[in-house]
View 1: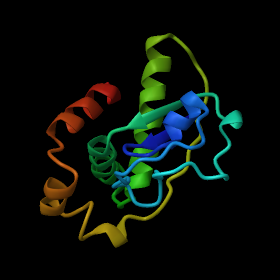
View 2: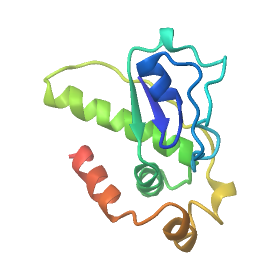
View 3: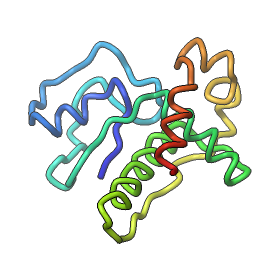
View 4: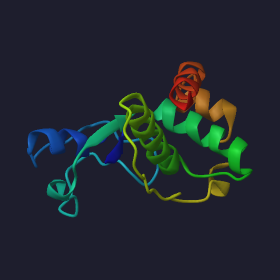
Amino acid sequence: MVADAEHSVFHDYYLTGDSALTTDKSSRIEGIGRPRVEPSFIPGVIDRMTTVPDTHSIATIHWLESQLGRKAGASTGTNLYGVLMLANEMRANGERGSIVTLLCDSGERYLDTYYNPDWVREHIGDLDQATHDLQTVLG
């Protein structure tokens, strides 16, 4: 499963197969999400995709910091929220299995952005609903 960032064309391309898709609004999650389909994206090797709202990506990195005692980048938040949704779905369906993922990057270089509450409010939005949704997914 691939978790895609909000304002990225990859999930829509996966669903439609239209390689000409573009968007005029770029992803606010640094390092992932693209405004156009890139040749390196190969949808045939993917079983499933989901789009994670930016607010949920950021809420997830703040929760992750409370768990690990270290900061991670927002792409890790996107990825991890997708993993948590999948695990929650598997649990609800009585399914068992393994999920493997990676922590994409350190969050130290994002102290002025994703870890700055004023910047987050201005550029990402209010995280209250996303934090609530995350707690629901965590069970």
